[in-house]
Image 1 (cartoon, rainbow, N blue to C red):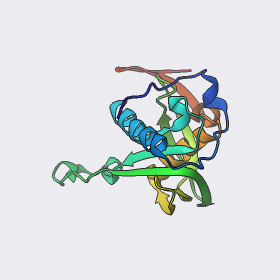
Image 2: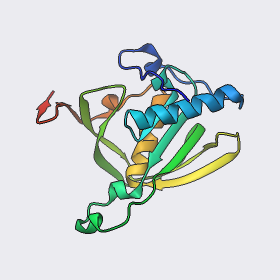
Image 3: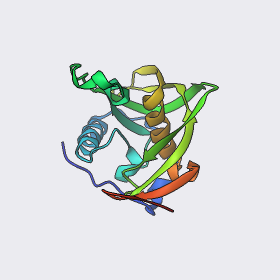
Length: 176
């Protein structure tokens, strides 16, 4: 496994529609492993192949429901393990009627955050790392992550959808 360089705007690959994956070979497995390592090192909760300069329909997401827990007893609860998702040629097949506004950032757009409206729940179908069909029903923060990463495969960035954007620094935020 190796760390890959995460490309940033205005890199053209970030604006291209990614190609479907049809070969499930050793090179694909290496790319998946490298993307997982790169996402974790960044650190991030998701990464799409175009972000490592590969115009193919592949995303990785690593998520823990604990990330959504805001209750005061969170410190007393045992840490929930993060779940890793690898999805090839992902497609959103169903969406909830409800949409929610939430804050997003992106490893390919460092220093910028924004408020983006997304579906509260979605159903996604695609292939796992070995080419076997998989279907997921996700909601909340995980649905947001999947929508954000799938957008990358269509050349869409969160800044295209944001209702407002701002630069962030360690201590303070500045409106754009």
